[in-house]
Image 1 (cartoon, rainbow, N blue to C red):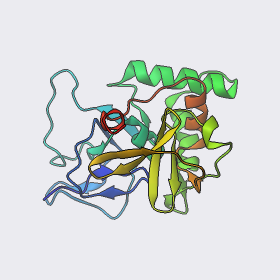
Image 2: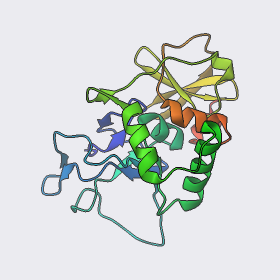
Image 3: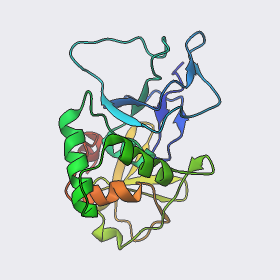
Length: 207
């Protein structure tokens, strides 16, 4: 049975067999004895997107008390859930993200702590995923942004919406409207400034 450690674009942590491209964490939120989640869904403001392979290191998932390994289909999903690139194992991506963040906001390059403070306010509302109004036409949103219509989440790529599913991305659709923006506004600004998240190969094989 799959462990409850897969993250959806809505930021929920679910038990599905999906194989993702990235891991990450929100601090220690599990019991290693049972490999089950605690009631809390985060223990830190630093919600990270990490590489699954780093210098040959191997971890037994949810077996220790260092951090709770979470998994994302791809980086676009991780960003939509409210995470950001890790400065330790994904330094180059994290620096690009920070540079694009600063350029979009016309400010000095922020520290990781400063970005985490902003993202924490944008990702949550009363303990649940914060949904944001879509700030422009869907056609003007950048690749890698994620929007929601009802309970369905769509990653935008090349002018089309690709619905997130447990098995990967579904066939692309032309979206004429959507209810909410899942990607936090500051992250969206970084995407508009040129940051390009890694997307799952199924987004290209379902054309």
